[in-house]
Image (cartoon, rainbow, N blue to C red; front, side):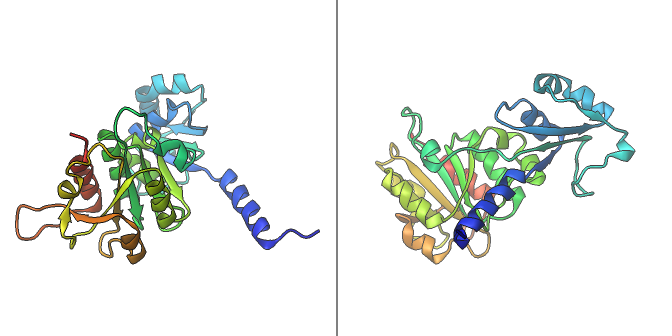
Length: 259
Protein backbone atom coordinates (compact mmCIF):
# COMPACT_ATOMS: atom_id res chain seq x y z
CA UNK A 1 0.00 0.00 0.00
CA UNK A 2 1.36 3.38 -1.03
CA UNK A 3 2.07 5.77 1.84
CA UNK A 4 0.20 9.10 1.89
CA UNK A 5 2.21 12.05 0.63
CA UNK A 6 2.28 13.73 4.04
CA UNK A 7 3.74 10.60 5.64
CA UNK A 8 6.48 10.40 2.99
CA UNK A 9 7.33 14.10 3.45
CA UNK A 10 7.48 13.70 7.23
CA UNK A 11 9.83 10.72 6.94
CA UNK A 12 12.04 12.59 4.46
CA UNK A 13 12.22 15.60 6.79
CA UNK A 14 13.25 13.34 9.69
CA UNK A 15 15.99 11.73 7.60
CA UNK A 16 17.29 15.17 6.61
CA UNK A 17 17.28 16.29 10.24
CA UNK A 18 19.10 13.12 11.35
CA UNK A 19 21.79 13.73 8.73
CA UNK A 20 22.22 17.44 9.54
CA UNK A 21 25.44 18.62 11.13
CA UNK A 22 26.74 22.05 12.12
CA UNK A 23 30.30 23.40 12.10
CA UNK A 24 31.01 25.52 15.18
CA UNK A 25 34.07 27.75 15.20
CA UNK A 26 35.91 30.07 17.54
CA UNK A 27 37.55 29.22 20.86
CA UNK A 28 34.60 30.02 23.13
CA UNK A 29 31.98 28.23 21.04
CA UNK A 30 34.16 25.16 20.50
CA UNK A 31 35.30 24.94 24.13
CA UNK A 32 31.76 25.08 25.53
CA UNK A 33 30.52 22.53 22.99
CA UNK A 34 33.37 20.16 23.84
CA UNK A 35 32.46 20.12 27.54
CA UNK A 36 28.70 19.90 26.93
CA UNK A 37 27.70 16.26 27.57
CA UNK A 38 24.45 16.82 25.67
CA UNK A 39 26.24 17.80 22.48
CA UNK A 40 27.03 15.02 19.98
CA UNK A 41 30.51 15.80 18.68
CA UNK A 42 31.81 14.37 15.41
CA UNK A 43 35.04 16.00 14.23
CA UNK A 44 37.48 18.53 15.71
CA UNK A 45 39.98 20.46 13.61
CA UNK A 46 42.48 22.71 15.42
CA UNK A 47 45.79 24.42 14.94
CA UNK A 48 48.59 23.68 17.41
CA UNK A 49 48.00 26.99 19.18
CA UNK A 50 44.26 26.35 19.50
CA UNK A 51 44.95 22.81 20.70
CA UNK A 52 47.10 24.19 23.51
CA UNK A 53 44.38 26.64 24.54
CA UNK A 54 41.64 24.01 24.40
CA UNK A 55 43.61 21.08 25.80
CA UNK A 56 41.52 20.59 28.96
CA UNK A 57 38.22 20.71 27.05
CA UNK A 58 39.58 18.34 24.39
CA UNK A 59 40.69 15.88 27.05
CA UNK A 60 37.27 16.03 28.70
CA UNK A 61 35.53 15.36 25.37
CA UNK A 62 37.41 12.14 24.52
CA UNK A 63 37.46 13.38 20.92
CA UNK A 64 40.61 12.83 18.85
CA UNK A 65 41.52 16.19 17.29
CA UNK A 66 42.97 16.75 13.84
CA UNK A 67 45.89 19.16 14.30
CA UNK A 68 46.54 21.14 11.12
CA UNK A 69 48.79 23.90 9.89
CA UNK A 70 47.07 27.35 10.05
CA UNK A 71 47.72 27.73 6.31
CA UNK A 72 45.83 24.52 5.63
CA UNK A 73 42.75 25.05 7.79
CA UNK A 74 40.29 23.36 5.46
CA UNK A 75 36.81 22.97 6.92
CA UNK A 76 33.42 23.84 5.34
CA UNK A 77 32.93 27.27 6.93
CA UNK A 78 32.88 30.70 5.34
CA UNK A 79 36.37 31.82 4.41
CA UNK A 80 35.81 35.12 6.23
CA UNK A 81 34.85 33.41 9.51
CA UNK A 82 37.08 34.28 12.46
CA UNK A 83 37.67 30.68 13.55
CA UNK A 84 40.71 31.30 15.82
CA UNK A 85 42.13 27.97 14.70
CA UNK A 86 39.30 25.80 16.03
CA UNK A 87 36.31 24.19 14.30
CA UNK A 88 34.04 21.44 15.57
CA UNK A 89 31.47 19.45 13.62
CA UNK A 90 28.44 18.61 15.78
CA UNK A 91 24.83 17.50 15.68
CA UNK A 92 22.25 20.20 16.52
CA UNK A 93 21.10 20.20 20.14
CA UNK A 94 17.71 18.79 21.08
CA UNK A 95 16.10 20.78 23.89
CA UNK A 96 12.88 18.76 23.86
CA UNK A 97 9.36 20.16 23.64
CA UNK A 98 7.68 23.35 24.78
CA UNK A 99 6.18 21.45 27.71
CA UNK A 100 9.66 20.27 28.71
CA UNK A 101 11.05 23.76 29.13
CA UNK A 102 8.13 26.13 29.81
CA UNK A 103 6.98 25.02 33.25
CA UNK A 104 10.02 26.38 35.10
CA UNK A 105 11.53 25.20 38.36
CA UNK A 106 8.68 26.28 40.61
CA UNK A 107 10.92 28.73 42.46
CA UNK A 108 11.17 31.73 40.13
CA UNK A 109 8.41 32.99 37.80
CA UNK A 110 9.65 31.90 34.36
CA UNK A 111 10.46 34.22 31.47
CA UNK A 112 10.52 33.18 27.81
CA UNK A 113 11.54 35.08 24.68
CA UNK A 114 9.67 34.44 21.42
CA UNK A 115 11.13 35.62 18.09
CA UNK A 116 8.87 36.56 15.19
CA UNK A 117 10.91 36.29 11.95
CA UNK A 118 14.26 37.18 13.54
CA UNK A 119 16.56 35.56 10.98
CA UNK A 120 19.96 37.19 11.59
CA UNK A 121 22.16 34.62 13.40
CA UNK A 122 24.18 37.39 15.06
CA UNK A 123 21.04 38.89 16.57
CA UNK A 124 19.82 35.50 17.78
CA UNK A 125 23.25 34.69 19.22
CA UNK A 126 23.26 37.97 21.14
CA UNK A 127 19.70 37.30 22.35
CA UNK A 128 20.78 33.89 23.66
CA UNK A 129 23.54 35.57 25.67
CA UNK A 130 21.07 38.00 27.22
CA UNK A 131 18.57 35.22 27.89
CA UNK A 132 21.21 33.28 29.79
CA UNK A 133 22.29 36.33 31.81
CA UNK A 134 18.73 37.17 32.85
CA UNK A 135 17.65 33.59 33.50
CA UNK A 136 15.12 33.04 30.72
CA UNK A 137 13.66 29.57 30.41
CA UNK A 138 14.09 29.54 26.65
CA UNK A 139 14.36 31.46 23.41
CA UNK A 140 11.85 30.25 20.84
CA UNK A 141 11.76 30.87 17.10
CA UNK A 142 9.99 29.13 14.25
CA UNK A 143 11.17 26.30 12.00
CA UNK A 144 10.96 28.64 9.03
CA UNK A 145 11.90 32.33 9.06
CA UNK A 146 14.18 32.08 12.07
CA UNK A 147 17.92 31.54 12.44
CA UNK A 148 18.96 27.88 12.74
CA UNK A 149 22.01 26.73 14.66
CA UNK A 150 25.06 27.91 12.73
CA UNK A 151 28.68 28.59 13.49
CA UNK A 152 28.03 32.35 13.28
CA UNK A 153 25.16 32.12 15.76
CA UNK A 154 27.19 29.99 18.17
CA UNK A 155 30.20 32.32 18.02
CA UNK A 156 28.05 35.39 18.73
CA UNK A 157 26.37 33.52 21.58
CA UNK A 158 29.85 32.96 23.05
CA UNK A 159 28.96 29.60 24.59
CA UNK A 160 25.37 30.42 25.57
CA UNK A 161 24.04 28.15 22.81
CA UNK A 162 25.26 25.15 24.80
CA UNK A 163 23.36 26.16 27.96
CA UNK A 164 20.41 28.31 26.91
CA UNK A 165 17.45 26.37 25.47
CA UNK A 166 16.73 27.46 21.88
CA UNK A 167 13.69 25.88 20.27
CA UNK A 168 12.35 26.31 16.75
CA UNK A 169 8.69 25.36 16.68
CA UNK A 170 6.25 25.04 13.80
CA UNK A 171 3.89 27.95 14.39
CA UNK A 172 4.41 31.04 16.54
CA UNK A 173 0.72 31.81 17.12
CA UNK A 174 0.07 28.23 18.23
CA UNK A 175 3.05 28.49 20.60
CA UNK A 176 1.67 31.71 22.08
CA UNK A 177 -1.73 30.09 22.63
CA UNK A 178 -0.06 27.05 24.23
CA UNK A 179 1.87 29.30 26.62
CA UNK A 180 -1.30 31.20 27.49
CA UNK A 181 -2.88 27.86 28.31
CA UNK A 182 0.01 27.20 30.72
CA UNK A 183 -0.70 30.48 32.52
CA UNK A 184 1.79 32.73 30.74
CA UNK A 185 1.09 36.41 30.22
CA UNK A 186 2.29 37.05 26.66
CA UNK A 187 3.52 40.55 25.78
CA UNK A 188 4.36 41.69 22.25
CA UNK A 189 6.99 44.41 21.86
CA UNK A 190 5.67 47.19 19.62
CA UNK A 191 7.11 50.71 19.45
CA UNK A 192 3.65 52.17 18.84
CA UNK A 193 1.99 50.47 21.83
CA UNK A 194 0.28 52.65 24.45
CA UNK A 195 1.46 50.69 27.49
CA UNK A 196 4.93 49.94 28.83
CA UNK A 197 6.22 46.61 30.17
CA UNK A 198 6.32 48.06 33.68
CA UNK A 199 2.72 49.29 33.50
CA UNK A 200 1.31 45.97 32.33
CA UNK A 201 3.32 43.97 34.87
CA UNK A 202 2.38 46.13 37.85
CA UNK A 203 1.09 43.70 40.45
CA UNK A 204 1.80 40.74 38.13
CA UNK A 205 5.56 40.27 38.32
CA UNK A 206 5.07 36.90 39.98
CA UNK A 207 3.33 35.64 36.82
CA UNK A 208 4.99 33.59 34.10
CA UNK A 209 5.77 36.04 31.27
CA UNK A 210 6.63 35.55 27.59
CA UNK A 211 8.01 38.45 25.54
CA UNK A 212 7.58 38.45 21.75
CA UNK A 213 10.00 40.43 19.57
CA UNK A 214 9.72 41.00 15.85
CA UNK A 215 12.32 41.47 13.17
CA UNK A 216 13.86 44.89 12.78
CA UNK A 217 11.85 46.89 10.27
CA UNK A 218 8.61 44.92 9.87
CA UNK A 219 8.25 44.14 13.58
CA UNK A 220 5.53 41.77 14.73
CA UNK A 221 3.19 40.22 12.21
CA UNK A 222 -0.47 41.18 12.45
CA UNK A 223 -1.44 37.64 13.50
CA UNK A 224 1.08 37.84 16.33
CA UNK A 225 -0.29 41.20 17.48
CA UNK A 226 -3.79 39.75 17.58
CA UNK A 227 -2.71 36.68 19.58
CA UNK A 228 -0.64 38.21 22.40
CA UNK A 229 -2.29 39.44 25.59
CA UNK A 230 -0.88 42.97 25.44
CA UNK A 231 1.24 45.09 23.13
CA UNK A 232 3.90 46.95 25.10
CA UNK A 233 6.76 49.33 24.42
CA UNK A 234 10.10 50.19 25.99
CA UNK A 235 10.18 53.72 27.37
CA UNK A 236 12.84 56.03 25.98
CA UNK A 237 14.35 59.03 27.71
CA UNK A 238 14.21 61.22 24.60
CA UNK A 239 11.57 62.09 22.04
CA UNK A 240 12.69 59.28 19.76
CA UNK A 241 14.39 55.99 20.44
CA UNK A 242 15.18 52.81 18.56
CA UNK A 243 16.96 49.63 19.64
CA UNK A 244 18.45 46.71 17.77
CA UNK A 245 16.30 43.61 18.41
CA UNK A 246 18.99 41.95 20.53
CA UNK A 247 19.34 45.08 22.69
CA UNK A 248 15.56 45.31 22.95
CA UNK A 249 15.45 41.70 24.14
CA UNK A 250 17.95 42.42 26.91
CA UNK A 251 16.13 45.58 28.07
CA UNK A 252 12.71 43.88 27.93
CA UNK A 253 13.93 40.88 29.91
CA UNK A 254 15.46 43.13 32.56
CA UNK A 255 12.29 45.24 32.73
CA UNK A 256 10.17 42.12 33.21
CA UNK A 257 12.20 40.48 35.97
CA UNK A 258 10.38 39.61 39.20
CA UNK A 259 11.04 42.30 41.82
